[in-house]
Length: 309
Image (cartoon, rainbow, N blue to C red):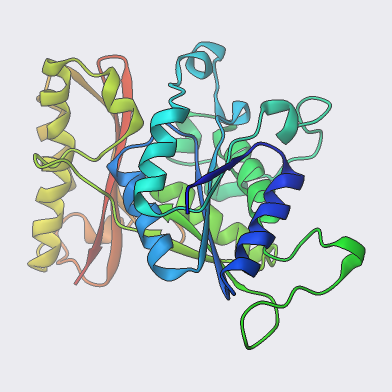
């Protein structure tokens, strides 16, 4: 079955309901994206297809999470290529709304607030970014709920067992802080959805795949490899239960003249608080998350590696 494209909330509900009925489906997966898709997004879509009867991907460049208008204007729009990638992975339906469809009447007066978790790390460098990201994710999660918007409020029955279909949403581990915040929002506000994390996709040389990589020159791309190397250095020490020596990893990044380090630290994977006691002379134990952000030329890149021992 060819992939379908819809641009309104009403058509999203109608088509997802139709697909669930046609497939006698008992589960729906949602893959929220901003487009300019790459193999990492393909991995998200494939995971959703493998775990659900019907899969919807959204493509929406959200103006609320861009600090400067030129960054919003510069973000690539590649709908035709994105559709082809998603169809190749087996996605059933693409929701690509306009800004007016998502925010009728202009920017929303009421928004999700990311709170203390959203004020550190990326939030400190990009004030308001996570408020905007969570606001649109909240809307997309609500719009994607299977069985909503039924005529007359009738109950949706899917599969032989009846009841509402299982509902899952898929996010990449590369945007680690966003993933933590989405999980916290879903838990705190009782969203009826399971959040599934998909590991970071990397190029053969280790660079984390990102829609921003296309803006790097060849020289800058080579310089950007220092980010994954620094994380790998920390990961190797964690695996060996050694002190993490984050200072040496920072020095490695700072030795690259084309890279301007914003932050590199090891944090608790739930609270995002620094695990300073595990970063110096104490052998690493437990769970952690090594996170880095830097500008390579004019391009801001982020990366992370989960740690465990």
